Length: 494
Ligand code: BES
Ligand code: MN
Ligand code: ZN
Image 1 (cartoon, rainbow, N blue to C red):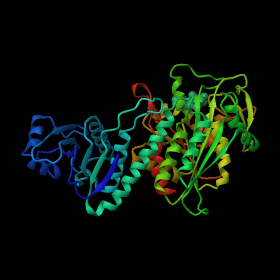
Image 2 (image 1 turned 30 degrees about the vertical axis):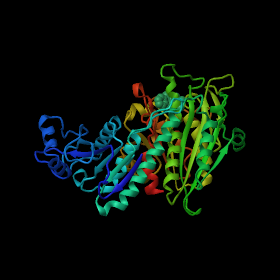
Image 3 (image 1 turned 120 degrees about the vertical axis):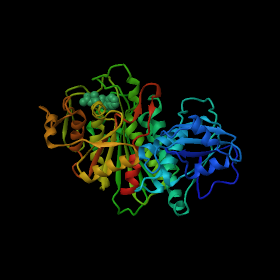
Image 4 (image 1 turned 135 degrees about the vertical axis):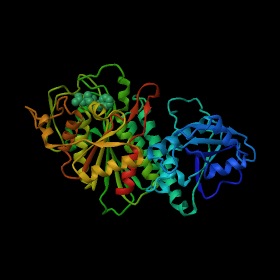
């Protein structure tokens, strides 16, 4: 889809749909009032009949209105003028995008009118959000079928803005499209079958990304190399699997090498059976999504390559498969981590923290300005915050707040859980420095506490995305979260 920002609607409008927000109130104002006049009150009549309503996200397409240069006019409910919240604006865009995709329109035109804006929000936020939602609405997973999908009908979008906003909105649309493209990659990787998407497959994906981007290079560690570094925890997870683990590092250099990088670290368990502490069979297929943290790091790196920010960003993915086997880790096994701390593996299903802890030690070599790990780490995070919000845990209040704010701005919501000292003793072990589980109370927090022991030498935040990374049921599939949140953080703070 090609999205263009202009200051006036295009002259030629073949197979187009003009989108008009409808606010509540008796009188039509702004663009929709002008159009209504031109088409001899057809819109006012549709409102009177009750077909067009101002409720947020309601849509109605009218065809072949008199005197109009576009064949379709879509009226989309936009609530109260000047009082549309960010969440409501996203709803409006989503309904509009879905209705457009269902229609035969090949082109759409929308004017970003003042009536849609909140007082303290700039035009560029609206342009970026709209672009991102438009691209996202066309996502389809097709990698497992040779059947040719018909191409999307909607090919061109014009966003009309005021002259003073043209430059910033053009840049904002670029960002929105790049972020949506990153999300598409994250969704694709998440949705791929676990017999295809293995640690080695992910390593190849990284190399492919580096091949087409001059600023990106990769370093990929094999199991032998990780053994040399003493990554006993990470290797204890892949031990029972026929699939070799990989530690995948993607290094994006957009600034002077002296500038400290931001490191994004993703949990990449390409399938989590639980190992010897095996999971129940029901819905176990969904544990192919246990690499969605890694997928979001890939998505962010792709968006970063597209936008070329002047900063240094390292994407690291800890990729392994967790399987039961004669050689798999057992409950009671003790392993030595790269940090020197020993871990008693009381439950082989708490494997995410085992691959992450050695990765957290490994990335010290980058001397990071900040580290953000992203992981589908605990069912407890889903219990705590549901499928709405990511859980943030951090050793730095400013970093936690920046991530919370990024969630507010993008709608990719995140909320902080405490990592208080008082929780740490739940990880005490009788036989090693630390146990890999902390009992059922505060399960998301004790997982965070476990990671915190390996993240003492830099600013660090942990994002538990177990609730938000994918949807179950009829809509089963990866969401591409938290790529928008990560990108909002990276573009403003890195
Ligand atoms: N990948 C799972 C977490 C998970 C479970 C995410 C269900 C989304 C839905 C993780 O590896 C895991 O199994 N965690 C255990 C930890 C427990 C053994 C301390 C869990 O949450 O049950
Ligand atoms: Mn597990
Ligand atoms: Zn897992």
